[in-house]
Length: 390
Image (cartoon, rainbow, N blue to C red):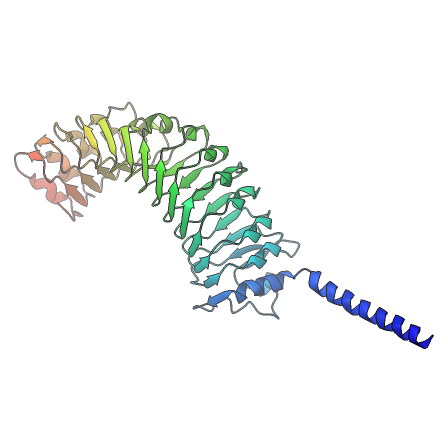
């Protein structure tokens, strides 16, 4: 009987110990513990940016870069330009109220942890200007609340996953610039019906622009500079009625350039330079009053400089060099009093330098080299008191 009692007591004690161990094992980490695990993955903190992240501190009150919601749960982690080095901690997936993760301007390396697919509350991810690598994870496309995604200036490679834009109807802005991405722009990008802009510049992308890109009604920013994109763009781009910033520079586009966008009332930046666009720059009935940059240099454009360009009253940069333009320099350019830069070199333009160039007092650069000009340099160009390059 005594042995049976001892056995039962021993068995009960063993069960208690195992239950206690099991409780410790499955008990979820507190948000403080999660943040300290994140700190534990930091290998270098040159500015001691995480010095306030201590075991005795309160994350909502004491931790620099951490903000909480009204219920006391971590809602934001914002640590930018702090030069932190290390790898991203998978433990952040335990922050079930995290909405904003901003870590740009650091030195994080490695991959984006798969565990982040569990943070369904995320609506802003900014991991730009780090040393992250691998492929862009398609699980980001399953996060239902993403509004802002910036992975630019890293070492990501491979293709932009089509699945990334499965459920992106809330997404406003996407940036993957300055990586090593290849392949084409996914047609699924048009699923982002509320998208306002995307920046895929400085990659190795090929193919064309998705044919239905302008089905996105609020699309304002298209930035595709320095890729290997090709094909015609006039038809796709011309129906983007909300355009403010168009940069197609340094690609291999051909056919007619989308000059008809110049009349769109909100356009501020137009750059189609260094492609294979041909044809003439057409006369336009109107020009956006907000247009500041017009750059069509380095193409195969011919014809004359249209007089209607002088309707762009607020333009600051006019660059048409390295084309096959002929005719003369329109005298009415002198009416563009806000011009800072005029680049017309390496064309077949002849005639005289307009006397009125001296009226453009803010002019800094006047590049007319390798043209067929005759006559003298107008003496009143000395009125351009900020001129740096002639």
